[in-house]
Image 1 (cartoon, rainbow, N blue to C red):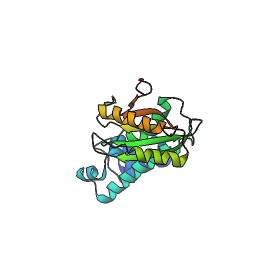
Image 2 (cartoon, helix red, strand yellow):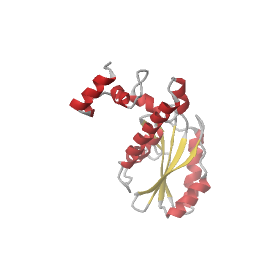
Image 3 (cartoon, one colour):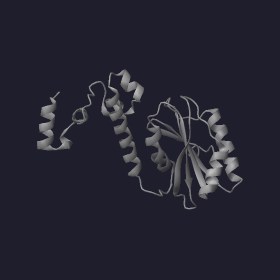
Image 4 (cartoon, rainbow, N blue to C red):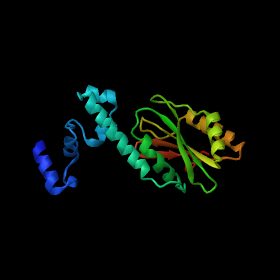
Length: 203
């Protein structure tokens, strides 16, 4: 591995794109020899401290992770039209696919199936999260949404829905129909893959 001085010289003469991940982090005073950039940015504060990073360095790494996530979200066009389960999964996957716990999100759409809001509903443990149907419907009515998509993740990597997932989907669909709101899909994110209730005929 090149020394910091060599990395700095290379940066000056050949530009930032000539540096690999570890070298880029070295310019920020972060030693990443134990894992690659993606692995490092997925570590939480406690894990970073256990790896031997100082609190100030751990804060810097967590800040980099948040900047990366916000960039991914900000680069997405506003009022995206949902044309397929793949489009819906792509919008939320960056938020969920690397988490070690479950989170539940809801996308609210207008009459043209364009997303008017994308919000976290709940954050749970490693194998369960809560769908508060009253809160979903309250927010849908506030936004004058015509349809919605429920999304949550499975940290286990197995995208197939459990019985509780199926029950919550059925209850939410029934509640939404009372207000003339359609539940278009329930998507489960698992790593780089996903499961769609709509695609699998479970809605």
